[in-house]
Length: 71
Image (tube, rainbow, N blue to C red; front, side, top):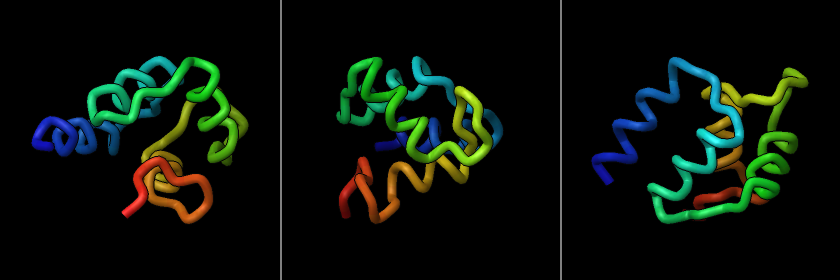
């Protein structure tokens, strides 16, 4: 879990593309295919780009609709 926390700190400063998102999800035990990652980015992306920012990442991971991490 320490690794996931350090990765999350890094995410706050950058935008993630689908490959970076895929690698991060694999490391936290939530593997997804390339197509699934692209779809996830498209669903939460508010800027019409191929990357997600920190806020969009949080919405994707913790949001009520189709969240990756269900608490």
